Amino acid sequence: MARPDKAAAVAELTEQFRSSNAAVLTEYRGLTVAQLKTLRRSLGEDAQYAVVKNTLTKIAANEAGISTLDDLFNGPTAVAFITGDPVTSAKGLRDFAKDNPNLVIKGGVLDGKALSADEIKKLADLESREVLLAKLAGAFKGKQTQAAQLFQALPAKFARTVEALRVKQEEQGGAE
Image (cartoon, rainbow, N blue to C red; front, side, top):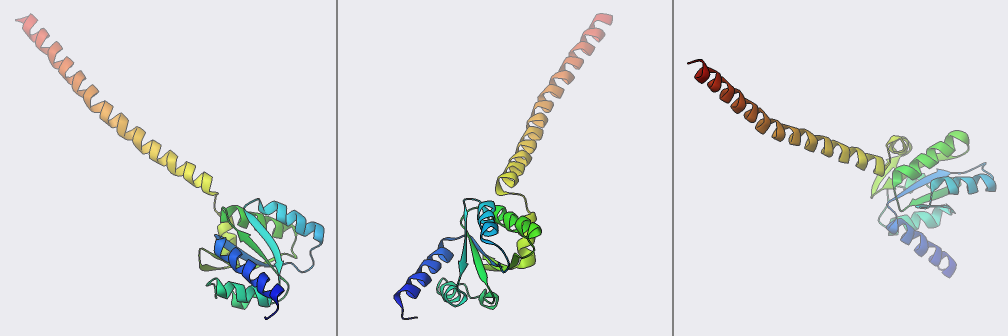
């Protein structure tokens, strides 16, 4: 580890682990360069997919405070460092793996919590952050609309009751 190029590589990987919201480890054995290029494009702008050396990446992950990935560093490994919405990148990985069975999702980490390959697939099944926020806003708006209708109904009902009493009194007063 005394070589400066290895130390620089570990420092760069450590910074990527620290600055990422999530990281997903994959095995890419059997994928062509063109397929890897397509995979990188499918992950979007908020993710960086890099083929890494297991030993250096394991050291970098440990330096970044992530020791839960140690068992996954075997065989050819590539890491998707995700800085944006993890759901979007997880969907990109899942969809690419469906079309290219040579891509194997090993596991990953999300906000410091270890994720298995199955958990990453469940993450990919979630709707994007924007869709979830839109649904939440719609639910709030619906509740506010219901409250506004309730508040409008009470004075309207009161006004109709008062009007009915007035009409009734006029009828009773007019009949006498």
